[in-house]
Length: 174
Image (cartoon, rainbow, N blue to C red; front, side, top):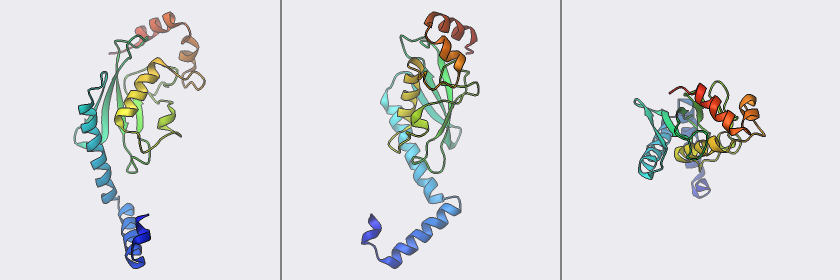
């Protein structure tokens, strides 16, 4: 740790200042989160990944709107979904809250748009970024985890892809 090579009085003052910063809304922490999110936005824009995008909602860097196109060769092919991403002050050490805004009939998405995806819950790591989140959700569309469904009706219908696609197309709202 860096504090091991620091004067004990300076280390105490530094940790007190950091504590005050986190108590008062953490303007220093918010600044570092803002920098991280700006960097992630640039990375996402420059990545050239097909079928995913995300941008801050108005001027609030902590609330983004994302879009995901259904993966080719899946029942979601040709469909486009909107998502909301909300970043906590503890990001990237805390996962963002991500949910579908567009109604999504899927085994791992409930009727409120909440997503059951391990990297958004217990497998979260500060190494993940917006790009990896969107790519993971896009991948989940074509490869659901039927062992842990939020939508049991979708999970039961999944094995019959023809019936699943018919139901999906009848309920999808553009």
